[in-house]
Image (cartoon, rainbow, N blue to C red; front, side):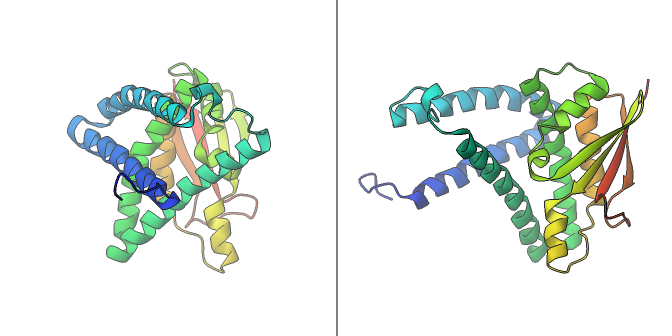
Length: 236
């Protein structure tokens, strides 16, 4: 596109695509060069600065203040926008998996998937702690609060069961991915290895005392009432 040509929707989506890819590549290479802990610290600093800059630039382009970007937008529309973005996140996860599976095989795709979750889950947990103001080692109350603001929390149906003073069970009662496969007559996607990586990483970032146990997750057999189930126990 020449500078004099009008910007199109395709131009904007291409900018978003490259912005997301570049940000993600910085995160991935930071993990490679510095390790996950330092990379998460760097993402906190860079992310806070970047999204402040982004809000300011969008506001100036629209001729408003950052607080006015979505002013006047009704709650129903905001909810729909939030759901659209979260479901797009899930779609991105799916199309990447399929692309790697096509390039290589299922085993390679699962290995890439699990590696991504080993980095994203601690990041998501840190973001939840920051957004909610949760303390370090906040125990079961902090884990419940953090799980409630995850991407998946808005896409799937889930529930908690309090077992003891130091343990809870978290169940996914309806999973978009598995429900979609069921509609197509497909078997459950075997997500257990990724789930272990995901929930161990997330819970340990919330509180390092947590032990995460998989009660059941595909390819395990499971009842109709839930798709996967996880026990989180505080080990003193």
